[in-house]
Amino acid sequence: MKLSNYIGGQWVEPENGRYIPDVDPGNGEVLAEVADSTRRDAERAILAAKEAYDSWRKYPAPKRGEILFAAGHILQAKKHELAQKMTREMGKVYTEAAGDVQEGIDMAFYMAGEGRRSFGYTTPSELPDKFAMATRDAIGVAGIITPWNFPMAIPTWKIFPALVSGNTVVFKPASETPLLAYELVKILAEAGVPDGVVNLVFGSGDEVGETIISDPRVNLISFTGSTQTGRHVAQVAGEELKRVSLELGGKNAIIVLDDANLELAVEGILWSAFGTSGQRCTACSRLIAQEGIYDRLEKSLTERIARLRLGHGLDDSTDVGPLITEKAVDKVHSYVEIGQNEGARLVTGGNRPSSSGSLGKGHYYTPTLFADVAPTMRIATEEIFGPVLSMIRVKDLDEAIRVNNGVAYGLSSSIFTQDVNRVFRAIRDLATGIVYINAGTTGAEIHLPFGGTRGTGNGHREAGTAALDFFSEWKAVYVDYSGRLQRAQIDA
Ligand code: UN1
Image (tube, rainbow, N blue to C red; front, side, top):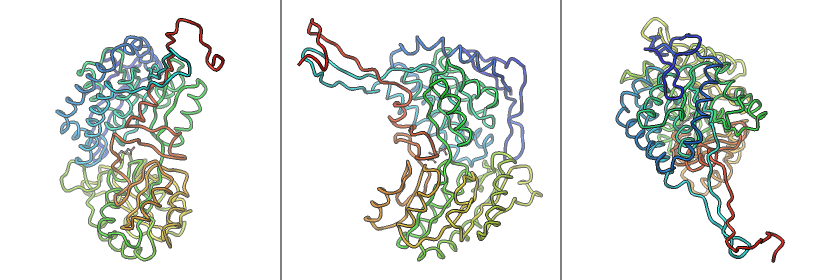
């Protein structure tokens, strides 16, 4: 199977005719061949999006919404098939892949409804016989650059609000997950998205990504990925004064206080730290435990982690799938060595599984727990993006909050306690964009704002109506029906 670009409503070969393999990280199987496009292909896509913009922005928003409804129904009908493909292409276990597709379905229906809302507001004028209102306008061509860890959810979080707001799209998915991007764009075309409104270009960040962020015809950029790349995106796009939304790294923590329900906390920790093999921006990689519960928590977690089964995500008995690439495995392992050199205590995991069995062909790493981690160690401050959890001991809630807030990121945080007073202090003081009470750090729902503070981004939020604030701009409209010149601020 060959995955070509989709430009101006046509599936087209990359100009250089080059394709590279798309590989299953769980067993090395080649799933498809994907276009390795260049700057020229990206420029064609940008031109197509630019040309389609004027008629799309004038296409009634409720009708744009209806196309998203149709896309939502197709996604729903194909949920199982798409989830299976996602597991094979990205590695996460089937149930989690199905959840990823479900986020896309939820976002389709939510944003479809926005076609009949996208509320602005009216407000009184300071002058008589004059009417004032604020409406939302489309912006232009949206450059959408997405990561591999949520191959359906994240593209839909960006593309659907972009479309319902009247923008056209140039979409560059991560090189590791082209198949799901291809499926999504096929569904959008089938749902009735007009030619040129959504364009898909496969290829590297250096060629395709760089063109999208620097080309002046692209008006806004929505990017999810590493903090390092995000900084570069902001710099390049900033030159052209583009609107830029960045969703970057995390170093999310779960706080467990002495009075917590221990079993519930353990479930939440395992799910947040080792689900998707720790490859979520929202994954929990720090466990901040109060001293009275620390040892019991460590013991219980150690037993449970030892029972987690590694394997291919389509195998029913698998709890933890592979990492995305061998390079990712190397990075995770280097952090394990860093942790040991820093003096943290490796409790369990910390190695590649033996390469003799079926795991030998994939990129696996054993779920890993470190204890006696100091809050300033590198394993407790830098994003690892793998199945590595660091336990930090604290005296009380105040220290827990200080440790939680003491990193360069601020996406998600969580606290387990039964004390309502401490719950509300935590809600007030945890400096992250998402806060969970008695639940892990993952599992954001699509109708609430998603995003983080500090190094996690640049202040924008995705999902919910917050997404419309990024993908549209305000137009203030004054209608004077007095029939004479009325001067604001001057005529009493
Ligand atoms: C991400 O890891 O980039 O809250 C997104 C969650 C998911 C989305 C994660 N709904 O974990």
